[in-house]
Length: 371
Image 1 (cartoon, rainbow, N blue to C red):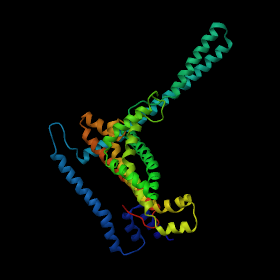
Image 2: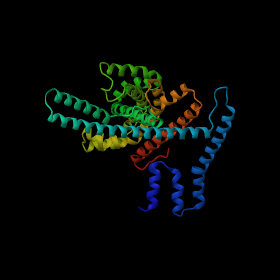
Image 3: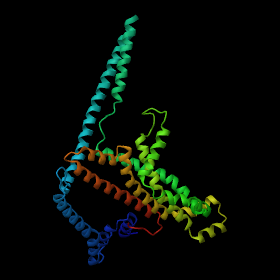
Image 4: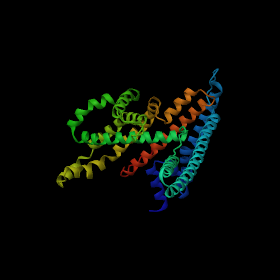
C-alpha cells in the first residue's frame, strides 16, 4: 500500500478527518475540493475560536462587580503560565533540597564509618559509646537518604493525580461492567433480572454516591494506620465514585453488543460444535467490541466529568480540589486560575475522548468513526 493509502488509513483510525484534505492535497488530488475540506475542518474552527475569544474579551470588560471580575483570555493565559512556572520552581527547589539531603547522608555515613573504626581500637565503655554514636549517625544518614519533599502539590501534580484517579475508577468500572454486560447479553433471563437495577441506579448523581463510597472506604480502612495502605482514603473515595457513575454506559453497550451478534455467526458456531468458551472468545467478544468500546468511550467521559465534583467533596488533591481551593482563596488571580483549569480539564477530556475513538476504530473492522 502506498504512502497515501497508509496516511488516509491513519486519519480514519485516529479519528482525525481534519488531516485528510492535506494528505489528498499532497497526493495531487483536486485542489479545489481539498481546499473546501481544509476550510471546513481547519479554517472554520479557527474562526469560531477567534470569535469566541472576542466575545470572551467583551464579556470580561462587562462582567465586573465590586470584588470580582470575569478574567479575560490574556489574564487566563498569564495565570496558566504562572501555574506552570510555579511547578517548575517548586520542582527545582525540591531537587535542590534532595541533593543537599543526599550530600548530608553521604557525610553522615562517612562520619559513622569513621566512628566505627575508632570503636574497633577502643575498649570498655568508650567502645560502647562510639558504637552507639555510629548507630545514631547511620540512622540520620538513612533518614536523609530517604528524604521525600513535603511541599504542597502543584497544579501539574494535581493534573497527574486526577488522571490516576480517573483511570483507577475507569478500570474498576470496566472490570465490573464488561463481565456483567456479557452475561446480560448472552442470557435474556439475566438481562431481565438486572434491568431494574440498571434503570434505577444509572441516573444517580455522583453527589449521592460519594457519601456511600466514603462510608465503605472508611469501614475498609478501619484499624489501619496512615501510611500502611497503598491508596489514600480520599483517592479511593473519588475513584469509587467515578466507578459507580461511569460503569453504566459500558454495561448497557456491552449488553447491546453481545445481544446484537449476527445469528449467522452463532449458527456457524453450532455447526462447528464450538464450546461455550470458544463461542465467547472467538465470536461473541470480537463481534461486540465496536459497541463495547463505544460504551467505554462514554464511560471515560462521564468518569472525567464526575471526578471534578468528587475531588471537591472528597478533598482528593486533584483538579477538583484545586478549583475549590482557588475559589475559597479569593486572591486576585483566583478566577483567572479557575478559568485556566476549566480549559485544561476540557483539553484533557478531549484527549481522552480521542484516545478512546482511536481504540474503538482499531476494532471496528473497517467501520471507523471520526467523532
